[in-house]
Length: 226
View 1 (spheres, rainbow, N blue to C red):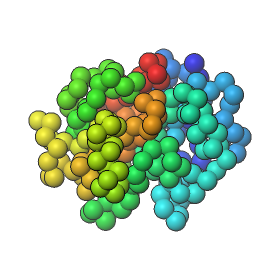
View 2: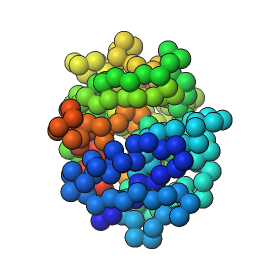
View 3: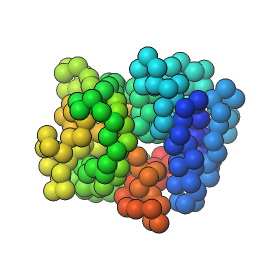
View 4: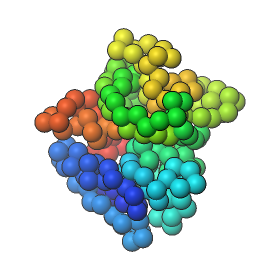
């Protein structure tokens, strides 16, 4: 198993992801986007950062990179793909998942720990948790507000493709617990396949026990179970 972590110009969480996966015993390598996706990649991480300086829209330029077309093909064939923060924006911009991430309701960059409620525990990315469990992970974004039209949001909800939701410590998805104004407090969603997921919070920054909480480990272990 070798997970490819795609590095774009402006990525800055690729090494975080590599260290976190290595801590869990999952082989990973950073791949420069111009070099293409390795044929033997058993998983893909689209990491956080500011690809192409977030010009136009966050993730919009990286989503047009040829390697993302290869990632879409791999995802369609069942390869697990995880987009984190800027990678989540790239995932939406490229059509891997529904919706879009846009400017925070506060109109400022926010870096803090948040609580997430696990909406489903029967996916690779959440199999380590219980449904309804509350985990704590950090966010670090200026464009993390999840937006989608009401009809597609209803379909997303009905299809059980909301993976994580911002909540308070008791698991209630209150407005006060929503750090960016995301619709329905959505923090992470699934693609058409459950092996594809994007989320705005950073599980890789909640994995190493010597730097803080380890609640994010279960998300990354999705590469072992997908």
